[in-house]
Image (tube, rainbow, N blue to C red; front, side):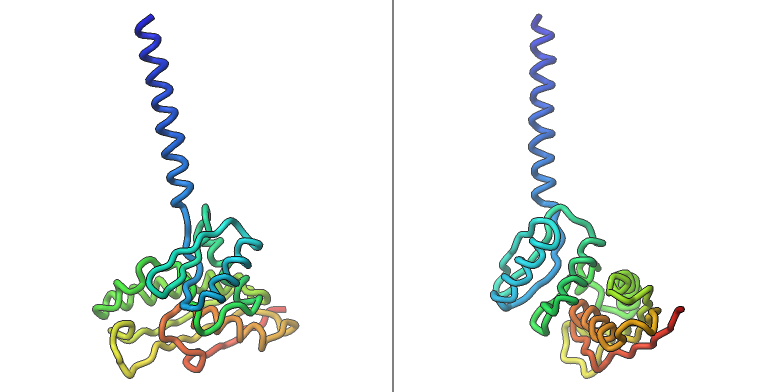
Length: 201
C-alpha cells in the first residue's frame, strides 16, 4: 500500500514538473523579427505580425523596441520579414533579424568576417526566395573588418543574382529585394547593392 502511494506521488510530481517545464519552454520559444526606435512603428509591426502569424511579444531595451513571434522558427521569421516588406511597413528606422545569431560577435578579425559573410549569404538567400516573383536568389555580401563598431570609410557592399520571370514587376522585385538586405544588414545601403536578373520561361 505504502509503495503504491509513493509510486502515485512520484508520477504526480513528474507530471507537474513536465507540465511546468513545457509551459516554460513554450513561453520562452520566441524569435525576434524586427527592432526599431520608433514606438509607433513598433505598434504597427506588432499588430501586423499578430494578424499575419502567431502571437507576438515586445521587449524594450533602452530606446529599442524588439518585436518577436512566439513559438516559431527561422523560416517563419523569414516569411514574416518579407510580409512586412511587401506591405511597405519596413522603413529605414527598422532593422530585421537576419537569422544569424549574435551578428556583432564576428567582426573582430578577417576569418570571422568571412564566416559572417557566408552565414549572411546563406540566410538571406533563403529569405529572398520568399519575395513574390523570386524563384531563387544568391547573394554575395562583402563586409570590411570592423565595419560594425568603427567609423570605417569602407562600406558593406552586396550583389545578388535573382531568378525570376519577365512577366513580374522587376522594379517591385528589385525594391523589395534591396529592402530585405538593407534592413537585415547593418550599414548596408541600397546604393551599394547590385542586382543581376536571370530569367526563366
